[in-house]
Length: 155
Ligand code: SF4
Ligand code: SF4
Ligand code: SF4
Image (tube, rainbow, N blue to C red; front, side, top):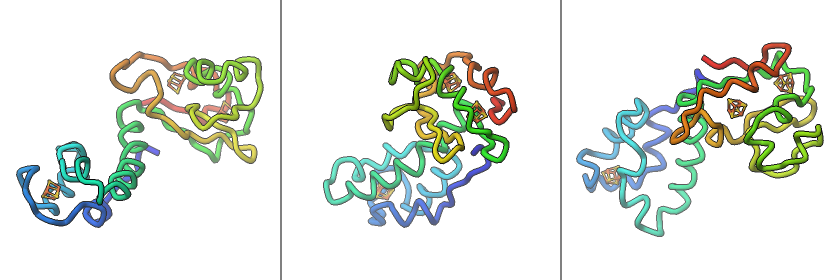
């Protein structure tokens, strides 16, 4: 998770590519700085204000959100160590709020939990909902402590 990167070219391909400079630079410079997290996607205002860019905005948001969440929370899941026990889904307070049944061991059905076990392997699907993510920034480590095979680490 944490070592995933987005390249400037991946970002540039989804920007409006008009070089309007409303962000104060060219599209390529913006893509380069966004890859380095020196600017935020919302600073490209045409992307958010013009309907013609809705698909590109959604694609960029989907690409960037998990990476930002991994950086902000420090939560990483090593799927090769996971036994699929489901304990992370049970103990995560966010998942218990989204789907109260998970606290009693039932499988998560919604798409809104932080963790989800699919085909016997846990996956992180909404890390931006983690309590370590802004604005909460809580020092929660419940999932790390609840994973007995140390598949979850928080750095
Ligand atoms: S505001 Fe967006 S479209 Fe305009 S130059 Fe910057 S990145 Fe390109
Ligand atoms: S608690 Fe650990 S081993 Fe169990 S499903 Fe979650 S990540 Fe996998
Ligand atoms: S750190 Fe806490 S809130 Fe975040 S995923 Fe783990 S258990 Fe859930």
